Picture 1 (cartoon, rainbow, N blue to C red):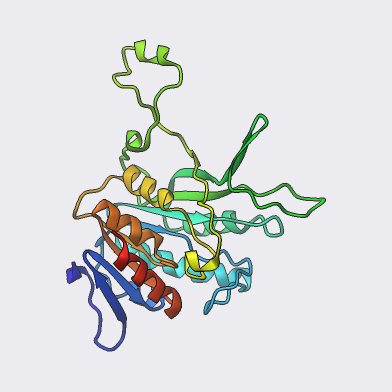
Picture 2: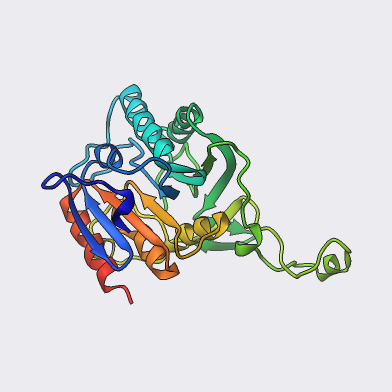
Length: 274
């Protein structure tokens, strides 16, 4: 498991749990210790630069500084990603700053090819019914923001994916009479409804202000395809969700986290999982 990482002694603190590695440090510096083309998948969600209150990281840079910082990280990510690898990048925005996600995507566009653009729907109203977790806002100008972007980047835009691994049955079974359809499952498409589980206290998420659901990570891994030797890396590990899923699926996982409190929480959570 350690063969693809060269970590100088006394430079980087890390913990290992089964086939999971959690590293404490700045992801830009840590990634330079990884071998070229050693990672199968990157699944991550960086800070959005919208003023979220993290313990250590200051989430309010000048826009050009923020995008330049991300660009440096993703240049390094391209170096460590295998040619057939995938990057799943979750970025949201706010009504006050609606351009964050698009600015990030345009920046990464200089490095990777956008193969799929997925809309992660957190809450939705269908006819008169509401589905998902809804946090009301007090505004006379804005609609409630109920989705975030999930960008699937690859090096060449031509990576085969396993669409039916997260597929859904046909609603109208008459489709099954078509000669080209051999099973009752179809592509889920690029709109994923994944609501948050209800959280009653900050302690349930390690006092981390921004988390994504386990199912989001699970669907990314299954869509790309995986086996026991697959290596998934999350450079912005946060509360440890990505490594919870990689451990569950029997996939090798590496998480990098700059904040000691979040690092400790993620380690304890992954250690005690199962």
